[in-house]
Image (spheres, rainbow, N blue to C red):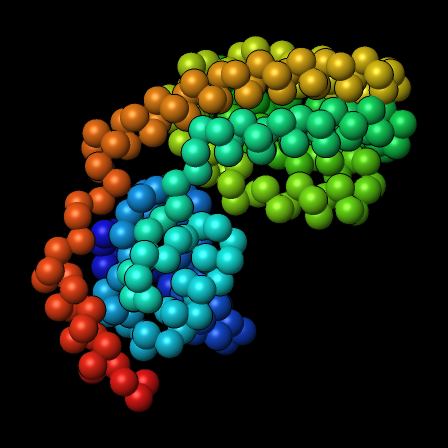
Length: 261
């Protein structure tokens, strides 16, 4: 389980004046899941979270229920949950969908992107190049994510953006997991530059084909890297130790003491 200090700090950063306790708990737990501070397969107990976050169990339950609907947590018992483990197969399916949407986005961007938007896309490619030159892989990761966001934004298609947001949490966790094992992504930067050049030339079909080829390579590489991550996770974490009778006793005690809350 993540250290108490980290949970308390995460909650303390929330704007308490505008967020309910449930919203604060939701935001803090969700952030830790997305940033892999809570690992896939890790067990989460309601009463332990309540203690660590210095809240009653009611807002924690509400937050956990919300995270279950997003597919980030899975219920094991009424009081015990685990961080969902995206499978490699689910990762491939997600990226196949994204490839199709982004390929179309590249084509539409060639028709619709403003000069200002093109300038921003070129800046993100330059930021990726600079980050790689400085061995700043965290900086590259941020610039890479920004590039893909701009590609969708440049279409002006609000519904396309809404559909892509459905995959934000899944993609972020998978990319972060694979990113830690990924070799120098110079080819990815070269692909992005070629896409932007095709968009600037207003050649939509070329932009689409370059981006689809880019995504096809990415899916293959990410699948292998993500499978490696899952293997490492099994060795390191063994997807959490078995639930003990002592944990069951703690749950029963928490349920008894929590009645009426």
